[in-house]
Image 1 (tube, helix red, strand yellow):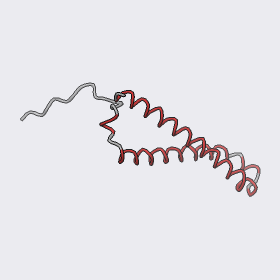
Image 2 (cartoon, one colour):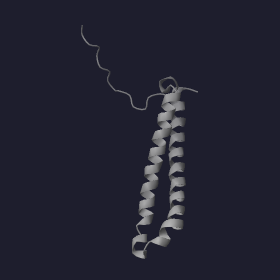
Image 3 (cartoon, helix red, strand yellow):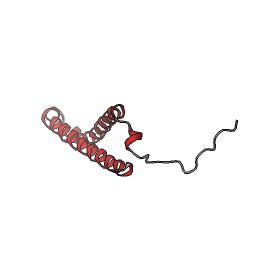
Length: 97
């Protein structure tokens, strides 16, 4: 496989991983919220729980994604296997000596 195809597969896999982590964290937080928090709260304050859980799950998925990506950066030589996503349109001229 070439570098461009590796890059496409990596981006698709990373996106899928991020979505799965977000969904799993959402359902885990929803389960914890329904089990432990709702019985102790008043009805008027229970309405904000769903929004807070959604935002927390996005934050958790972002943090997990960054940690896994940082781990992969230490283990894999990205320049060797992947093509850069953003490239410069114009190259800087070499400095004059």
